[in-house]
Length: 176
Image (tube, rainbow, N blue to C red):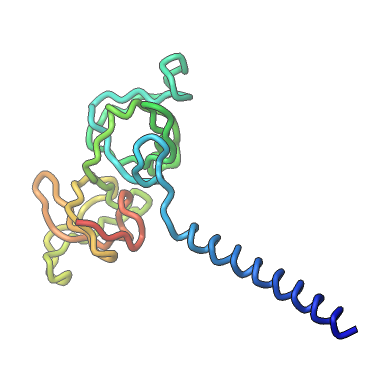
């Protein structure tokens, strides 16, 4: 009888160990960003449109129909998938489609709170001194973000805006 209890205890211990081992690796893998199978870069990630004319297609080939055309270079988009030379992108409104990777730039840009109605404050580096109010939808080049504030610049402006008021930088994201 004692031998049987030891075997049952060892089986239970092994099962519990396996569950904890599996959970540990699930958590470790969940914290590691996904990498694109083609570029090896993080997916999703923000990029910008390189051209004033970008055809967005239904699927990843020129045989797929064009569903709409972007006409504003510098507009931020989010890459959500990769397939050969094609990237699936999403805009701030949630519209998705496929574009050739050569029409995208790694240059970071952002939209000023397009979901808000009121202008957002642009400040000096002390985050107190107001420099300007930027209207929703203004596009700026993102120079860096510290997780709370981003420095953005554009025609006639350069300063800091709260990161939560930008579409083009992830919450808490830090980069130079």
